[in-house]
Image (cartoon, rainbow, N blue to C red; front, top):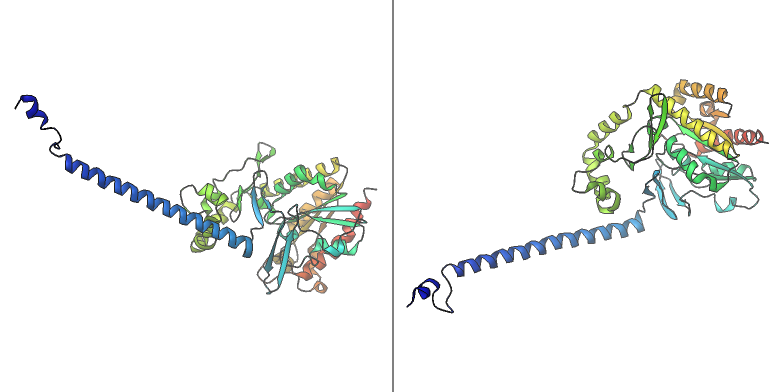
Length: 375
C-alpha cells in the first residue's frame, strides 16, 4: 500500500469522525427546523389573535378614536358605539363622515344658514347623554337658524383646538366659533401626551414667546405603555397589544400610572399654564376674525368649583376677554342656580342631561348676541 493510500484511506470508506460530524449536523438541522416551526407558530397565533381582536372590536367594541400625525388623535369617521353613563343609562354615540357628532336627523335642515362651530373637549363631545340632549343639539333645537357643528374631541386641549381650526375649520364656513373650555385645558396644553390615548402637539414658552411644538414625541407617553419590544409601533398598530395595555397592564399598575400622570401634569407652574391658555385663546380669536367670523369663549366650572361658589381663574379670564374685546361667558352662575337641578354626575366630572340643558339655555342668548355684534 502506498503512502498516499495510507493517508487517504480506501476509496468509498468514511474518514474517522465523519459519522459523528454528520450526526451532529443532522441534530443542529432538526433544532433549527423546530425553532423555525415554533417561531412561526407563535407568529401565526399572534396574527390570529390580532385578527380576532380586530373583528371583536369592530362588532362589539369599536374604537372611536384613531391616532393622527398632526393633532395626536381624532374621531374615526362613520363609527357608532353605545356608552353607559354613571346612572346606568345607555346612549348611542354616532360619528359622521367627518368624525363629528351630527345633529339629530330631526334638526337637520337647509334653512339653518348660520353656522356655529363649537370647539371643545369631552364636555362638548358628550358621550354621557343622548344626541338630542347634548348642549350643541339643544342650541340648534332652540334656534331654527343655527347649524351647530359639534367639533368636541375627548382630551383635546386648546393647542389641538387651535390646530384643528387652522387646518380644518375653514371647510365648515362658520359664522361663529364658540370655544368651550374646561380647567384641565391648562395642563392638556403643555403635556406632550394624553396618558390614555397617545402623544400630541403642545405649547411651551421660550424666552418671552409661546411656541407650539407640532412634532409628536412619544418619549413621555411610552412610560404609560407596557414594556415590550417594538412597543411604540405596537401601541399604534396592534389592537391586541392596545387591549392588553389598556385592560391588563395599566390596571395592574394603576397606582404607578396615577403617580406618573400627576407628576407630568405638575411639571409646569400654574402661572405658565394660564399664560399659554390665554395665548392660545387669542390665537383662535385672531384666526377666526381673520377669516371673517365671530369668536366667543365660554368657561365650564368644575363641580367642586360650583360647590365652592367661586373660581378666581374664571375672573382672570373674564378680565382678559374684556381687555381683548371678545365675548366671554362663565357658566359658574348658571350651575350655582338650584333651579338647574342635578347638573353633574356624582363621580364622573361631566354634565348630566340637566347640565346640558342648563348650559344650552345660558349659551343661546350669548351666541345670538355674539353673532349680532358681527352685523
